[in-house]
Length: 606
Ligand SMILES: Nc1nc2c(ncn2[C@@H]2O[C@H](COP(=O)(O)OP(=O)(O)OP(=O)(O)O)[C@@H](O)[C@H]2O)c(=O)[nH]1
Image (cartoon, rainbow, N blue to C red):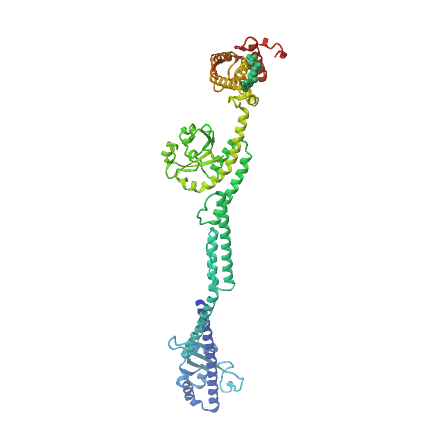
């Protein structure tokens, strides 16, 4: 605006100066012409001698500072030097006499500015008066010059006043325009600033800013629409967050970035849902635990943790996974919890344990880990109303805050895992029950059918033999007949205990059917098996079975064969053991018979 005023002022001054010079030029030129005409008339009238007073009167005219005539050389030569004022030529007069060109210029400086015009008189035979009649010169000779000068101080003052008025008018107009524009544009600028600020905050997830409507026009409408939009988004996002928090079963956390936090939580829930689909299609609990381990590492960046499975019947805890390694031994808790699951505080209480404030809240947390400054967060997986598994997240100091934020989502994963683990566990125990004999607790024939192939492969891999021992109580029918089936059952249970006590833990004791048992001695050929069989036989013979108030002694017959030395196929070797048992019975019972080819007289016999 100031630049505009400056330009206008300069342009005004320049054009006024130009106009003044043009006016002065015209003015002096006319005056000079009048002097020339007057002098010519004096000459024609013969009053040339009185020209002195003519020139002085002209010089005295108001507005003129100077008016003089200078004779040229040709005139001087013809008519003499002339009067005194006609000889006072200065440099500019001479210049005009030489060039024959009129000269208009400003002189006198800033304090006394004057406009000077020096105009040549040129001899001419044309026009009203023929100069050559009197002057003995050639056509076009400069006869002399007239020099006039006039003060232009008053014009300069007038010019400055005009420019001041002009600039004032422009300035006034500018100020009024500015005020008017300000009145119109200020609400627009304010609204634009507020929208920019609000959009910036909205980009970082904060929709709380509202815009002040400054006018009732379109600008005000923009502010109102923006506010409606922000309120709508805030309400919807709050509703989504609340619903999501319900899904995660937690309170919505305070946040400054509503949008990003909500988006993150929703994408977290999508992953939980994908996790659920994946574990439902998994075959075993181990696979589910493996996925939980992967989630802890990949989704939450926890690398130190334990996954425990609780056997509430046996009061034991089994380490399923440690730091992502399956079946690794207990590391972050005291190993004692293995045989005493109630030493785990989560198992006892059924809720999550936060060991960040006080690591001693659970006495079973590893002392080593404590001394390294580790804390922990232990979460239960609730199955059938009890703690089925425990997830222990071991925290380095820098992970403590993130663990609290992650906890609701981790619990969502565990809630999804719980029924699946429950189903897998039920399936496993159901399957286990079909492979066990309920009365004696021994494995049953079905187990053998499923496990035989594994046994054979083990045997082949280790290049060892196994003894197959068929056992059958002698005259067991009489026990049932005399004392009843309950006593008979009790005797079978005692018998199972005797078997278990006389074989290695790795050996298999199977109730093959009725009062018939099969013992498989692993990595043992028939030679070694005979002595074990005899030990069992003696143990049975020496045992006193309770039959109500009386004590009974019983004997047992045992037939054995080995795989692969006696039978090339497992089931063939088993058949040979059975044949041997038959032979033991035939030979008088209470004895051990090792298979020999002679016993295999004919299949029909057995
Ligand atoms: N109490 C009871 N008896 C059973 C069970 N399973 C089979 N038995 C009985 O075991 C007896 C087997 O009799 P037998 O096959 O004749 O043989 P044994 O009397 O033992 O005579 P030997 O085998 O020839 O010495 C039958 O009476 C069956 O009812 C069981 O689970 N409980």
